[in-house]
Length: 162
Ligand code: ZN
Image 1 (cartoon, rainbow, N blue to C red):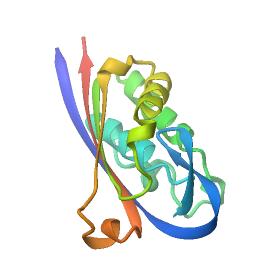
Image 2 (spheres, rainbow, N blue to C red; image 1 turned 90 degrees about the horizontal axis):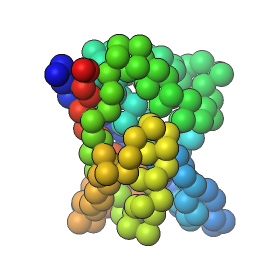
Image 3 (cartoon, protein in one colour; image 1 turned 90 degrees about the vertical axis):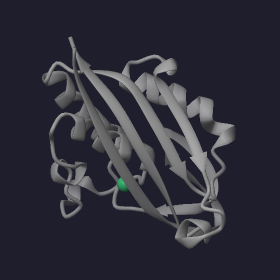
């Protein structure tokens, strides 16, 4: 079997707001008093996942396919970005073997949403939830993540070709 590994990383800024809003995380919406500042919907999981898939395929990053200088990419639904990465993967006859996700955030708390996010990603990628791991960590109040000024995500994927 031809196996390829891919790695993706994404960060976005957070801003404290007075009124609750929806933040996009792994294709679901989470209510929060923090707003994600981004050109797109700011879904760190789908961005890091898309980059990991593209990386495993030997392709450049999502910014290459969806430049933030283009108006049409403003507030873009990250599912469109992921679908593009999946389309490239399928064109190269690769399948997802597993996805390993690590979220770095003080807010929002991931635990209550872990299973929902897994289900969302399984559906988006057309794989089973057993192929997905979601881990979350804080930075022990250190740095910009610790100060709740931003959040980040690391994703590793393994692709296989039969
Ligand atoms: Zn992003």
